[in-house]
Every structure is written in structure tokens, then in C-alpha cells.
Length: 587
Image 1 (cartoon, rainbow, N blue to C red):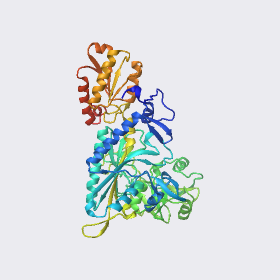
Image 2 (image 1 turned 135 degrees about the horizontal axis):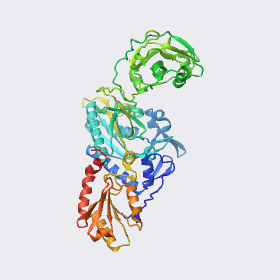
Image 3 (image 1 turned 90 degrees about the vertical axis):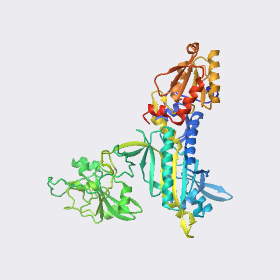
Image 4 (image 1 turned 120 degrees about the vertical axis):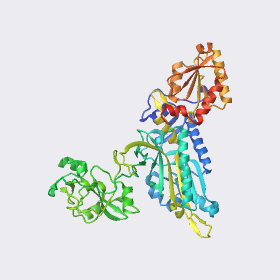
């Protein structure tokens, strides 16, 4: 491609509303253009990178034996009603009504395709002989992001690869899950992005086990708990803490007399601590939850947060949610903000850390009142102890006991063991070898392809612009003649350009009549991996200048066989990416 024949609208200044590097640089480099909040057009360069990421995903999926198909972007709302996901997705699900032949047809814009693929399989798969089977698609998805931001990291429409596997038994599911997990590792490695597989909750997708593939980044919206010792990693919703019994109170601390104090207007932990001049870790926070509609009191330290997924598992409940004001008043006898464990007539479950809190501040179960010097066993009892809180930095690892760290990260992929949730809801069954009808067991595997390139731009840049690996670069080589008015320079540029094309190299020829500084700045801003500069001085010596984007120094190479030698370098880097990975310590 010649620069003058394509559309590359680079910008010198930071666009309004762009906050993080990937958003700023992708706009400035002319890769994307915002149409509205949460919706972007991929301009020619951006589309090329997106297509390259797509092809890498497709190649690795095909290697696993998965078979590609293409499903619809919209489907009947009734499919989502059968799986109860209209309510689970809430406002994220984009719904509309299609007027057809005098009728109103409710449809949804698919945020994911478990329902449609399960319905499809229920129609065509009926025997154990037809499984295992893995089907995948690369399709645009839609979610109503109420606060879209950060460019293409959080949008209302996005390109996703979603795969679904179908099995007769758990052993078969586990085999495919491992294949997909390994394929995701290969995809991330080939794309040149730093990644961390983490244990995860399944969320509204449902399922028994799952892993997220994260790109560590300061601007990531997800929190990941990570142990450098054994490499244990999990998201905040899933992360375990290496404590398996109640903490012990310091026996040298004397128990003080329980007392009730008036605390007008102190409803929150911050207000209570300010009013009583107490530290948050000396406050026991009492939260009233409904576990399968039954009230339960949950105790955590004032500086900790309840992890509802852990609470759900500890109580073996189908559903847990914070109680409404009326329930809290009924259970505690007080308005919201004054619940406490002393004298409470409800089941009490406490985090392990509560065992070490001595002379605690707790709610008095009276309006505008708190108790001070409340102590476990003397003043209140706990029915069940468990790990109920979100993990924090320096908590012990559940596997090796070393202190863990908290890292921000960008979620790019997610793999699930779905089990039979969707198959049961949509009646996807098969006849087993023993002539009995059984429910199909499923797995689900998604990758946000947009997020691969955004994650790369977010973690691979310098003060000049993006730094693309060869595998994802919109063009691999940028031929940059200094003077397009110089006939000899352009003859060499055109010759090299054609030789690169013949060798299958993605090459762009910057044939603009611009100053060298402008061309170099644009090349670095966009991040082409290799720039080949053709200057009159170098030509006099029969040489051209070669510079890798991620290296500070350039080198002069002979024009003779230059295209062949560079093509060999590019092909090697395209497959292995060692130069790029070494530069960014991603080996």
C-alpha cells in the first residue's frame, strides 16, 4: 500500500476525552474513530491489526479441532427467557421489538451465544457418537455499557471469538478445556501481549469452573491477586486467602466492659470511626444478607469488604443478596447502619479475621447507637467461620503461604466449564451408548479480539507512540524515502516495495512529499515494526537505513538483496517475535 492512496489521519494533540495510553494513541495514530460513546469505526490501519489478531485466533482454534460457523447478531428474547438471563444481564442486555406482519417480535442483540448454540445443537446432535464437538464463531456482540470509556476496551459493540464444546461426560469436557486453555496461551504469546491466566468466577454465564486471561496493566479495571512464589492468580471475586481457621485473639489484651454509646448520624464505617476515634480494623461490620430468602448476619472487619461469591459458597446458597431496609429493621430492630452481633436473633457467619478483634466497636441494634468493647464468645457467638472477604495485598497465598500482591489487569479471554445449565434449560439431550437419554455437558470459551489490540497498545508504547509486534502490526515494513522528488530515491523505493510485495511482506511506502521529521514521527506514532529509510547520502554508498521500532540504534545495510534479507527477518519475527519480546521482557 502507498501512503497517498490510503486513509491515515494522524493527530498531533491528545483528543478530548481520551484518558489512557491505548485510547489516546489509537486515536492519534489514525487506527480508530469514535462514532458515539462506546462505538468506534476501525479505520484502515486499525482494521488491519484487528484482522491479524482475528486470524491468529482462528488458526489456533482450528488447531484444536474446533469448527467455525457464524450465528446471528440478534435472536428471540424467548431463548434468553428460558435460561433466566434476561434478568441476570439486566440493563446490559440490549432489547428491542421488531414489528412483523402486524405482530411485535421481541429480540435481543446477543451479548454472547450460549442460548443460540445450545438450541442449534439440540436440533442436530442426538447421539453420543456425534460428540465431543466444538463449534466457534467470530462475531460482533452487543452490550449496553452504561459507562463506556477507555476507547475500545469498554464498548457497546465488540468483536468476539466464542467457542462452545459439547460432551457426553466430564472427562471429555476436561480434555477440551485443557486444549482451549493451552490454545489461549498460544494466542496471547503469538500476539505479543503479556498475559496472566487467573482463576475466576463465572458470573452471569454460569458454570462450575473458569479461568480469565488477563493483561496486567495499571489502567485495567479488574483486580487480580497474584503470588510471585507459586504463580497462583485469581481475580478479586474468586481469590482465596491462605487462612483456614479463625484468627486467635492476643491473650495479653484485657477485655474491657461492654458499653453503649450514642452515635448520632454515624451510619457508615468512616462516620463511626471519626465519631468514636476508632480504627477501621477495630470495628466489626455487621451486614444483613438474604441467603435463599433467609436472613443471615455477616461479620467482617471494618477495613474489609464482604465477598458475596465466597459467602454464597460458605452458606451453600443458590442466591445471596443484601437485605432490604424492611428486612434489616425486622431482624435488628434498627434502621440501616446500626446492626450488630450482640443479642442478634439470626444466624451469624463471620470472616476468619474476626477471631482476633478484641474490644470491638459494633452496632447496638438501636437507632443512633453503637457498642464499644464487644468481644467474641463473651458478648456474642458465631455460628460459622469462613473466608468471606476480598483478598488484599500481603494476604498469604492459599497454596504456598507467601504474601500476595494486587495488580490491575485487562480481561481479554475467559474459559468456562458450563456443565448442564444451558442444556437443561433448552432440552439439549443425547442418546448414550446404553440407550438412555442424558443431558449434554458443555464448555464455553471467549476472547475479546478488540481487547487484544487495545491491550497491546496499552502495554507496548513509548513517548513517541505505539510499538507493534510484527504479528499484529498494520504494516510490517515502512519504506520511507527522504526526498520523493529525487528520482533515484523513488526508483529504489519502488523496487524494494515491489520486492516486499512479491515476498508476501505487508509493506507501506510513504510516498508523501513531507519533511523527514514528519514522516519519522508518523511512523513512530503508528508503530510500524521496521522502518527502511532511503536517503540520497546512503544511496551514494549503495545503502539504506534499517531501524526496528523498539531499538534505539539503526544500521546501514547494502541495497543489494536488502528486500530478501529483511523479508527473512520479518518472517522469522512474525512467527516467533523474539526481538519484540526481548525488548519488552516478554520471553
